[in-house]
Every structure is written in structure tokens, then in C-alpha cells.
Length: 230
Ligand SMILES: *Cc1c(COP(=O)(O)O)cnc(C)c1O
Image 1 (cartoon, helix red, strand yellow):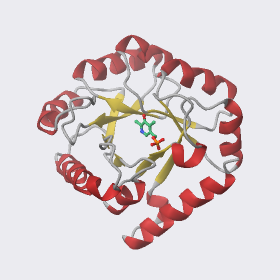
Image 2 (tube, protein in one colour):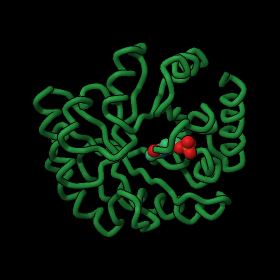
Image 3 (cartoon, rainbow, N blue to C red):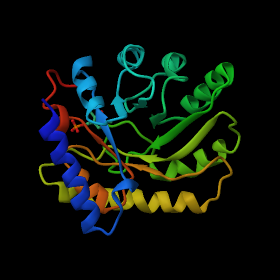
Image 4 (cartoon, rainbow, N blue to C red):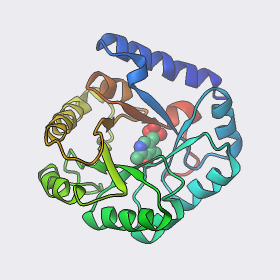
């Protein structure tokens, strides 16, 4: 029974957009369905959701096989290089690129399958030791690598903000990521159009939208608490 919770999330998105003078269609809602059974995803699909986020390769591939083909799958979890081949032609967007070597592996696998792959660079904006992600200072190095890629298109940045009780505490991180995003769009790297800022989760997506997010990744607020932590 997710109809009511999804409705609330959509209403919150539109108030956050209104509050910040943005249009609702500038923000893509990704329903984070990790650990949830197919039936829940189908329910979300019937309520109009076409973007789903998963954090495990095998789970994404299984759900991909069993659900309609017009779904856009988002890989949002840490991705091991030896697993890239299983999803490279299934995902709409990989949010979690956090090393040059991973970028190179995705390039090789995409070349092999003759597909292009859209990716985001995951930035560890709050410099948390427990989190994956690139340091802001390293981004320039990535921009140099990116111009060499033919099959991988870097579309923007993603971050996982700290877990906080009060979403306002994350506003500065969203603002920082947005500034970095603006910086790299000015680099004018000839690798496709940099336009995606993936930030905001159940606890803080309204603040993220106010700070310029174009993709929010919402799990708990749509599907309820997960059975086991991931
Ligand atoms: C699980 C997860 C989410 C969703 O988290 P909720 O707090 O349940 O909304 C978003 N982004 C990433 C990368 C995740 O792993």
C-alpha cells in the first residue's frame, strides 16, 4: 500500500519546487526499491513510477528481467569492477562511479557490448570516512580522464549526505555539491551534456531540491522501512 505515501512524496516535491521557484519536471523521483519484493515495484509502476534505484547488481538484474522494459534502472550502490558486465546494458544511469579504474572498466564493457552508458561521479562531499566517493579536489583528474572515453558519458554528480536528524544540517553539503557541479559544467569537457545533480534521500530531499537537486533517491518514504539494513 504505497499509494498514500507516494502521493505525499509527490506533494512534498511540488512544495519544495514552489518554495524555490523551480518547475516540478526539473526533478526526477527515483523510487529506491532495494530489498523490496517485485509486487511493491509493480505497484509503484502502476502509480506511474518509471525510475527505480537498486544498490546490488544481482538484485537489479533479476528485477530487470521480471519487470516492464520501459523502466529506467538506476545503479546507486557501490559497484565492483568485476560486476560491471552484468548491468552495463541494463542500466539507464550509474550514480556511483568512485574511481578512475571503475570508469575505465565501464568503458571497456560498454565498448564490448557496443552501448553507451550514462554515469555520475559520486562525491564524498562531507568527507566522511565511512563513505565511498571522490574527494572534490580529485574531480579535475577525472575530467582529464573523461575526455578519453567514447562509450561512457559523465552526466553529473551524486552524493550521499550524512545521516542527520534535521535535514537543514545537510543544506551546506547540497550547496557545496551544487557549486562543484556548476564548476564542472564550466569546464566544457566535450563528453556529452552535464546536467544531473543526484542528491536527496527520504530524510532530506526537500532541502536537496531547494539547493538544486535534479534527481532525488527516495526509498523509505515510499516503500516504508527496509526489513534489513543495507
Ligand atoms: C538506500 C539508498 C537511498 C534511499 O534511502 P532512503 O533513506 O530509504 O530514502 C538513496 N540513495 C542511496 C545511494 C541508497 O543506498
